[in-house]
Length: 156
Image (cartoon, rainbow, N blue to C red):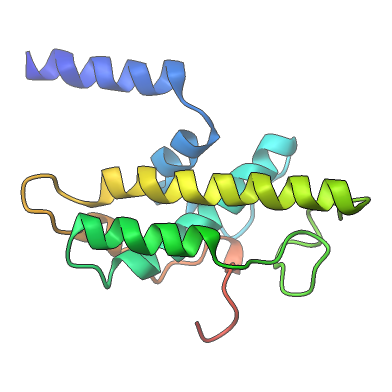
């Protein structure tokens, strides 16, 4: 029965996953890539979410419980962050700058929602429900840099 349940979970992930689930699922493999071929807009989003997961893990390594982790993820998700076209956005070469104020606001709202949802879902994976502690198998990826890039400023 346990094996059947695992197959069901895998099929459920494959069938109903969105870009956040995909980024979390493939994070451990993708984080080792120094280059990533961009074929479509989904690839750009996957790159951003993968880099954001790295930022989340940096925060989660300091958390001793899931509730503390969720608070950190909420704070990180709403913290002021640069968007494409702004100084400090590390992927400006890959993203088009918003064309006007409305596109700017839409982009910022989309990225904020993406960040908040990613943080919450990552807590589901990182924290062991029985011990309420973060998994060392996730935290061991804290120092890895996907594509030699980071969403945080140097030294953070």
